[in-house]
Image (cartoon, rainbow, N blue to C red):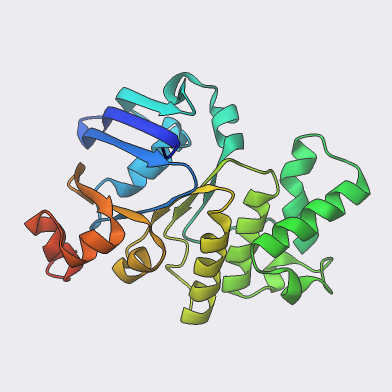
Length: 250
């Protein structure tokens, strides 16, 4: 039996009078890549940000329902604990104004790791997991801003991995990247799912098809369909899913 990472029941989210998510119920399995697709304002990013409590930072945020993470009520957990275990990689790479190695070490240092050898080991491991080590190992002391956009995004992935999270959330991580950089990020995801649970929000349905074991389709705040990716992309169960995949709206 596949272990569950998240069990979500009747999740509703409001920002003021705007009802952004409506009665969403689903599970997310351990060590899977769940692709989340849907047009703009469909609720997919709100859903993703719920999983590590970033919506809490927005004014007039209200939530109802239940989100279980590892058997715990995620809504009642301390936000700092949630974000330590559930990392986020955003659409635009946001490296810190530090060197490459210090970007990776930032999180572990904040958690109290100060041993130089240990930090070097963490840096090498995380950069290798993000498929960046071979490209930067000879210039770890240089500014992160000297990296290309694709390299900066993989550095942000490495920075997330350095604190050894349990889950990685990707919010359109390849939206500004060229095809070669996109392929490297996708390759990293497919390897990382052996150790991590991954939730990927993407506007690129082809990317969802390439990497997602299962895919969830959101529309106007509702979860319309959730199924194995191959089945959804060949024989979707809802006409709206089929229309979106075919590019009839978006």
